[in-house]
Image (cartoon, rainbow, N blue to C red; front, side):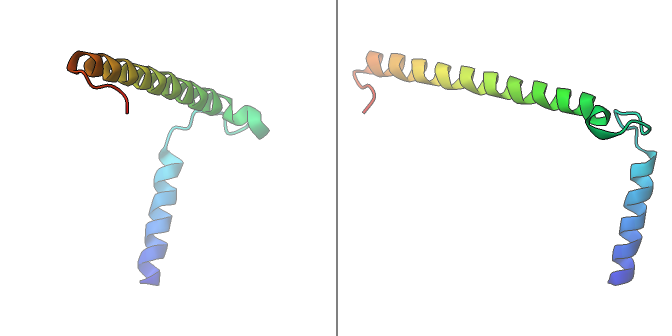
Length: 74
C-alpha cells in the first residue's frame, strides 16, 4: 500500500512538472500569482453578479405568478 502511494505521488509530481503554469517561475512573492489572483477575482465577481440576477428574477417571477394566481408571498 505504501509503495503504491509513493508511486502515485511521484507520478503526480512528474505530471505537474509538465504542466504550463500562468506565472514565471523566476518571480517571487505575490507578483508570481497576479494573473491567478486576477482571474479568480473575475470569476468570483461574475458568480456574484449572476447569482444576484437569478435571485432577483426568481423574486420577480414569484410575485408575478403569485399575483396572477391569487396567491403571493406567505
